[in-house]
Each structure stands twice: as C-alpha cells, then as structure tokens.
Image (cartoon, rainbow, N blue to C red; front, side, top):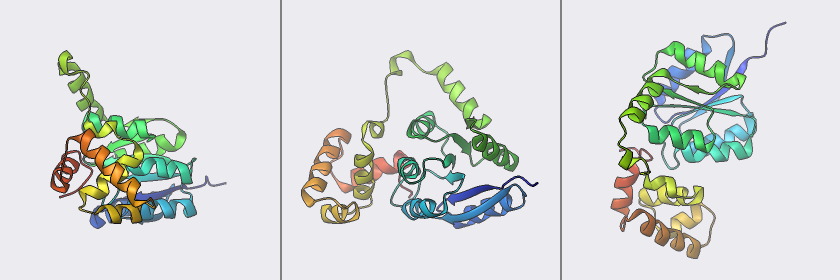
Length: 220
C-alpha cells in the first residue's frame, strides 16, 4: 500500500519563486502541494480549511511577516509543521522563527535537493536548519564580542499584537485603519502606537518603515 502523500501549503509573495517551489515539489511522488498564497493572512485562512502537513513560509511578506504568521498557523491548525524558506540567514531571524514555533529553517540559496530533505525531516518531527544557515550561525557565535552578547533586536521585545500593529503602521496606515484591520477600538490602536514609538524610538511612519525594512519585515 502506498504511503500517504505529504501535503504542503506555500506562502511566498514572489509568484515566480512560488511557482518554482510548486514545480519542484510536484515532481516528487511523495509530495502534494494543496495550495499557495502570496499573502500571510490569506494563507492562514486557507490553512485552517486545508489542514496541510507542512507550510513552507517566507519571512518578508506584505502586511504580515512570516514570523508573525507562525502563531496564527499554530492557533488554526496546531498539527501543521512550519518550515521557513527565506533569503534571510542572520542569527536574529533564525532565533525569532524557531522561538515563534517553526520546526525548520531553510535558505533560498540552498540546493533544491535540500528542500526535499528539509520537508521530509520536518514531517518526521525532526528539526532542520540548512547547513548554509547553520555555518553562518556558528561563525557568528565564534566571533561574537562578549560585550555584545546581550544585544537583541528591538523588534524582538514586542508582543505578537504589537508586531501586527507595527507592521501596519510601517505600511503607512492611520490609527483608524489599524483599528479596522485588527478589529480593535480606536483608543487601543492609539495606545499601541504610543507604546511602539516609545519602545522602538521611532516617532514617524517613515522611521517605522525604515526599521521594518531593516528588520526584514517589510519589502522595499
């Protein structure tokens, strides 16, 4: 009797890359791509309905980053595994992704065969970090100045809700639009904005946007 296929959902905003992933995975009999999206929120809604085994998830996405989408995926489909597939290879992004609940982290610069290995490993329940990313992490840990050991990204201090508000503000949305999009009161949206400006030391939408781009949460 044939083994059940590993059901995969793709969240990647670049349509050509998304099509390339779909094509590569479809060539393997053990994989079935059940859907894809270029938007994280749309993807989460589809995942709730389709209940795939694995989600391949980029980090820099419009409106909501992949890192911030992980808890949402966990909420709507706890058994679905998350494999980050991204061009970001820094320690900060790996730490944030794995802390948020991702089971694997793969560089887009990896060999295609590594994608198949990563999917199979994560499906089995084994953590996977691509050798290219792992090598970079080891190099940074070896050379890291002890005086900087406690330095963390300002973004990492935010709550999941604050990160959502931050990303919408960085897109230039007004308090009223943030309140509508996140289904909160206008007063709550204003309070979140004040807290973010204080925490991030950013006092305009332009400053928030620059920080979001630097942190890889907003594409240019």
